[in-house]
Image (cartoon, rainbow, N blue to C red; front, side):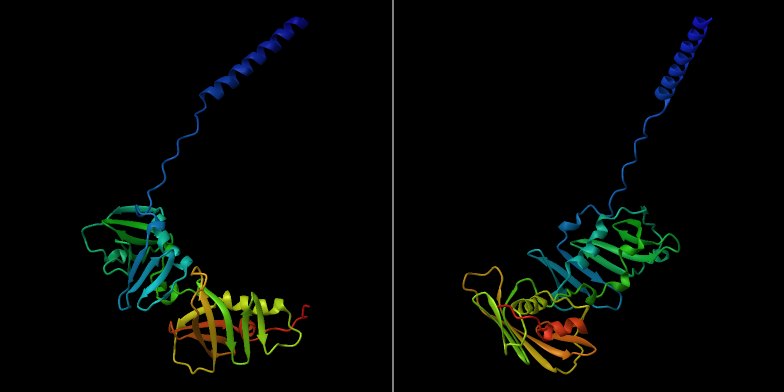
Length: 294
């Protein structure tokens, strides 16, 4: 009797194993994924070196890349913020949610006749249309194809010359050797920074911190000069980085337009105002006290 039961149990195990094997064999494998949608344009964003932006009733904006640095060249010349430019050029890498051939009828239904903006990347034109009423997507026209891209990728009204300006007060090429402020002069001798008049209880670290505050100063906003009166002046003597062992000495004049409730500095060579919060302004106009080092 026990042998019969054991035989039944073994037979049941064989059946279960056979069923599991059939299930595993007959179960379909992973379905091959559809290839990703093609990018908006067959050009890589890193290969873009020239940008032109036109908007109805607005000055043309021109941006050019030279030696790895972006410059605003229209409607005026100034340094451009790399990350702001790249946020625009990244549009070519977007994979549209949908695309279709542009119809022969007028394109006004898509906000493309006239377009809200025309962005030319190198020699490739992209017409920017309106947002779709649902789905947070925007119509764009490239060649003879209309595509739907995420609306946050590009905002026509934000395509202004000021929006591309670099907020860095001093360019990377500037290597300061002295600062002359209304009541303070900081000069570098034999690799060491000295302040005149020498403030009481000020360490070398504090002086170095003052210099670094100027070297890396980044404004909250940058605007064109509005004609405010000059209340003070800062003169910076500097060498250009990457030049010869005996580099030429250059002079940069920066005007003080306001110190309260914010610090506003003007670079006359650019015609641009740099706006800093008051706390940053205090670090740029004076050396904070601290224990003097021996």
